[in-house]
Amino acid sequence: MTTVDAPQPSAAASGNAASDRFALDKGGFDDVKDTPKERVDTLAREVLGAVHEIIHRHQVTYPEYNALKAWLIKVGHDGEWPLFLDVWVEHALEEVTTAHRKGNKGTIEGPYYVPNAPELGPDATMPMRDDEPGDKLVWEGTITSLDGTPLAGKLEVWHADDDGLYSQYAPGLPVWNLRGTVSTAEDGKFRVTTIKPKPYMIPTDGACGQLIAAAGWHAWRPAHVHFKVSAPGHELVTGQLYFPGDPHNADDVASAVKPELMLDPKLQPDGSYTVTYNFVLDPVEG
Ligand code: MBD
Ligand code: FE
Image 1 (cartoon, helix red, strand yellow):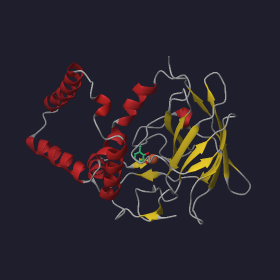
Image 2 (tube, rainbow, N blue to C red):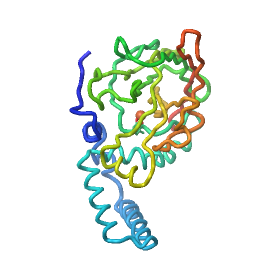
Image 3 (cartoon, helix red, strand yellow):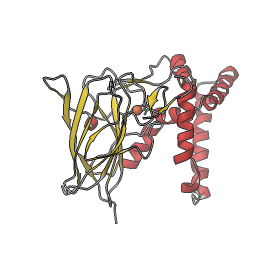
Image 4 (cartoon, rainbow, N blue to C red):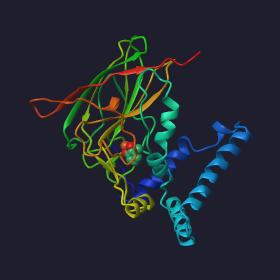
């Protein structure tokens, strides 16, 4: 496998990689080009109105205003708008978008998804290094429709390694390390062999880290496995799975943990973990 090096393991390197990825896949105005002026007016006016209200309520000073200005400029310089938005805003979007679902709702996507990961079939071993560190994890499951019908579908999986690093956003990792596309046949069944990721700390040397330090917050996300699961005629579910006992399940910096996304892994005599987690997809309306 080829290796893609982010220039250095820094906020700016991962931030700029995430900004470039976003520009390629989603960064345009096409999807909203028909938005009525009334809606843009309402949303923009209410966001600004909320800011004005906070300035009055907390008697915000000019030095504080200038610090905000400097910080916003730094978020852009560090390429951290994807990180900032996905950590502190996306969860509300996700809640609004998936509230109607009767099957799996999911949770946020975050900044590190890459489309078109290698196709691995229904019995998948994730791309990994020969000596990939970490505990082996074997995850079995089924994709079904709401009525229980098994679905021939697609399950994209991506996660951090044993150091909490994502391929294509950290230096020195093979380009598709721990990223893969699993597919199911008519029986809906899949098996994913991978390693258990470690908790993830968002970069602390950029603008987001500066905010975290200044506010006395922490930078941790609990260990998680990202997925996108889809099947023809069904809603795409984007989400993450979590591990019981992680110190940050209850205070995820990205507010993305939900009880229904908690795995129940079983430790096997050989030191590996096995787990079952199934997906139920809502049919598309109409
Ligand atoms: C991640 O790995 C992640 O999943 C989110 C939501 C934010 C930052 C890093
Ligand atoms: Fe993540």
